[in-house]
Image 1 (cartoon, rainbow, N blue to C red):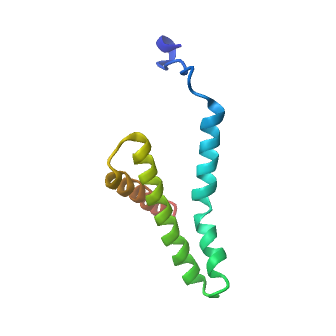
Image 2: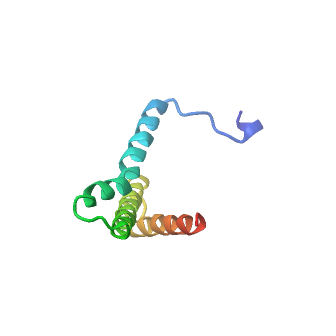
Amino acid sequence: MTAQKGMLPPDEAEKPWKSGLVTFASFLVFGSAPLLSFIVLTPFTHSDTVKFVGASVLSALALVLLGIAKARIAGQNYAVSAVVTFFQWCHCSCCSL
């Protein structure tokens, strides 16, 4: 398989179910950040603009924390990883408009 596809065989120590569980938990935690702001802000305001800004700020904070977590796992610089993750989010947000 290495010669034909240019892929290395899977490591025997890796467990696919563990990787899948970590990915699922990451999507669950970081994906719920925008919804959490709407849930928290709904009793205090009826302004959609305030809720949108709250969701944007909480999403940015969640992505910065995700960048820091990624840097810790990969052994990279925390600030660089957080900034790169944040600007990737900004770029994708602008492209989706």
